[in-house]
Length: 303
Image (tube, rainbow, N blue to C red; front, side, top):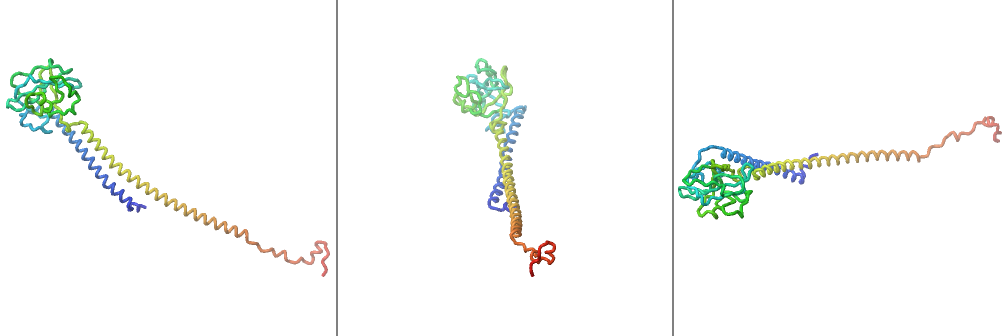
């Protein structure tokens, strides 16, 4: 019954299924591993943001990597209040407000480092932003990667003087009159009335849209594997049913043929019996007895 599996058509189907299912499973497992890696990275970033680890000199954390983003950094220098900037359209605890960003000129003469000294609610207003300390300070805070305009939900262009939409060297280099590092620091403790800005995970390491796309791709690959197996089983069952139907039709046809033959033979036998003449009754040829005249009252014929 299953010899059809050895036909060229079914060889092609079987080879395709045997190759497709492992490929789908491997691809789904790989996508799942990527999602799990991003979950672990997100957890690590959260732990770093909540940790009270000792800060390390900023120079030891550069160049910035996904492992150093969010680490506590330490930098000594002097704030430049003349170039203090506001970053509007930033949300904190479901409230809209703005960051207060002040460049810090390192004591070692390196590039200036943007420092987000805190967050204030409402529309960006320079009069509400407290002035930075005038003396040399040591800043402790989480080091952050430069932002990308695609990641910003607030305004990034057409802002008034004294405001900037994206924190990064690509944006600040057009505003500040000196070299600026392509990282920034958000302080752990902000001066009143500002609120400290929590550290954020770099793109591709948190539970963002890309992470959930990996999870969706995982489900798709596993569904493809199950679908390939289901279609093979459906084709196999249909082939088996077709063969069974063909065998049943052949059996019924044979039975009908035999029944028809028996009926035809019976009909021919009946017709033959009806058309064959029967022999005459011999009693009609026996001469009448001599006493027939006496019984009938008629004279006997002459001798």
